[in-house]
Amino acid sequence: MNFLVLPPGWTAVVFETIGSTNDEALRRAEAGAPEGTVIVSRQQEGGRGRRGRTWTSPPGNAYSSTIIRPRCVPERAAQLGFVTALAVCDAAAAGLPGERAIRLKWPNDVLVDGAKISGILLESAMATDGSVGHVVIGTGINVAVPPPAGVATYAAACLRDLGDRRDAPEVLHAYLAALAARLAQWRQGFGGTRADWLARAAWLGERVAVSQGDTRVEGRFAGLDADGALLLEPSDGPPRRIVSGEVFRPVG
Ligand SMILES: O=C(O)CCCC[C@@H]1SC[C@@H]2NC(=O)N[C@@H]21
Image (cartoon, rainbow, N blue to C red; front, side, top):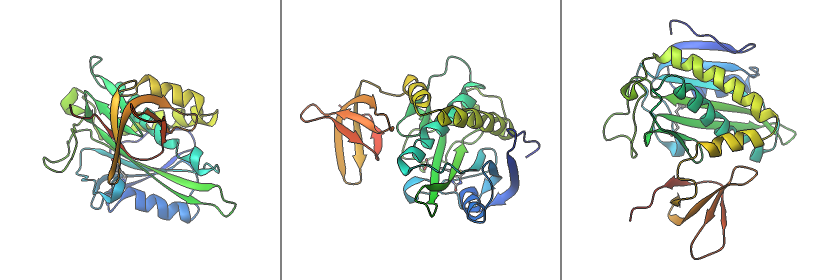
């Protein structure tokens, strides 16, 4: 990293290489590191994705994990996925040509012209009073290197191939500034975050499929409820409230 400008009060620990920035941030959070501690690495040797997947992490992309201490109920802490996706979206929008379509796929994927440009992994721990004591917000943004062919099970791209001329430290700077601003918005309540997320939502009002392990349900994506659950209207049954799963476009 040649430079890193941080939001006021935040501190960064920068590595040349690391196993996983999330693992390091979780360790430091357990040891008492304050909110706004950011672990950054130029590359990761054991980058982790959702559902136990590997996150290939060569130099050229932006890898960070930020410690937040929300002290709230788990349902509210889960909204940090929307906060983070909006921050990545803001950071991407600042460097991409205006004609690119940036959309948010529930719960926290960021798509540019239909291709995923980042991954978000939230990991948390409870405090003794039953609230969420800390959340580690892990984000990998594909700046200069797309996932290797055959690894991604979805369309994926990097910002540079989409016309963004910035390098990883510049994108990371934009992302962390946006994350601080989006966290401030969320602390006022979920309404603003929810409205801004819906304004960028992919496939809102359209037919989608949601897979949850071995089960799959299809219906119209009707919006988000007040907590951030996906509202799905199947054609042959009552409306459903979905709290986890993968959303995609049904074929046919
Ligand atoms: O599967 C996903 O989409 C989430 C990928 C999250 C990857 C980031 S890179 C920085 C942080 N450290 C990790 O080990 N994972 C997250």
